[in-house]
Image 1 (cartoon, rainbow, N blue to C red):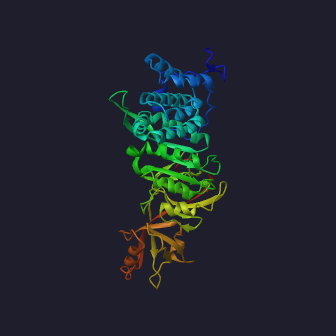
Image 2 (image 1 turned 180 degrees about the horizontal axis):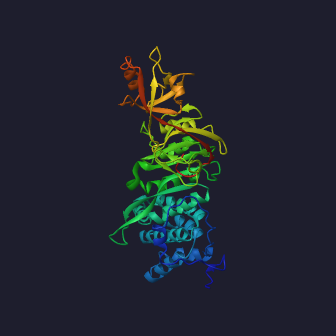
Image 3 (image 1 turned 90 degrees about the horizontal axis):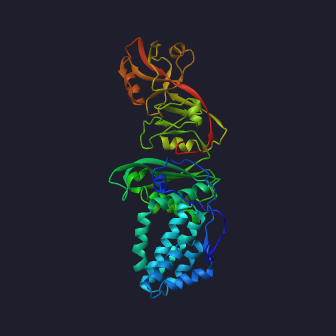
Length: 422
């Protein structure tokens, strides 16, 4: 080995030529552990300085050889470049910037994420030294290698115990072909009380979420889980600079379902595998009516209602199965033209029985607060107001026919929070 290398390790990891494809087309990441990055060879300080001095040499070949030598260095070599460019010629500055690019790519390829953190400061030092020269060149470098640099941020956050969800998107890859590739783009980031990062690591959030802005738009988000050490307001300040990114807080317990926040008559849209909701038997298109006896509003308010629950807690959901078949019950009206049913006026999604009077016709028919009413004498009901109106039309009747469907009580044991679902 040449004398100008100071060997820090005895073995180097060489990456195959397919590395770029592995980065671009790898599968979605939920959570993972990465091995520590291999240590890199570094130039001795004396040889590094000799090469820097030759970047402005009169001989073209000597300048080129000096650049090639410096490109073999690592972080320490990169950190020596800003001082050099402050007095270098235009060509010397350009060559130094190329050295910085090559060292950055090498650190990315070898997953030396902690060193990549430090080299970002070197990049800023270059911009400050000569923004007119280095600004456009470094912007072009960032754009060209954005996918590689984004993956470095992904690895860094995962090492800090963040969870990242990816979404499939179709995107042309410039420089590879004119075809459209299905790739994974970062959609949501989740950090909880085990997040070991600090506020200085938050630039990784904006870095990877900006990369998916064009294709994912407003579908991106950051979830602040339980007693996360990063202040919620700090995340909201960060998201304010990244258009289309929402920040939400969630308790440390999860259920494992998704639903439409803006839809008043919402139903369960998906049930995540391996979650408490899945084990409890919740299904897509179920309507959650009550949580531990209390009425459930829209999906957002439901997530708020879940805040007090912790992993291991048990709760009961009254749900309406989409597949439940209706049945018809015939009730006799008493002398007051009543049959013992009180409708829950606070529940607006359909007509829900709130209570049944003791010894009434409704109780004898087996009705209870675990039923909804779809029709009265064949006429459809949609809201509590419809029921009140129809009851004024049947005062001359001796009996009425109700079309009803039963609810189902489901017990759920809450688990720890992972992934993009409640």
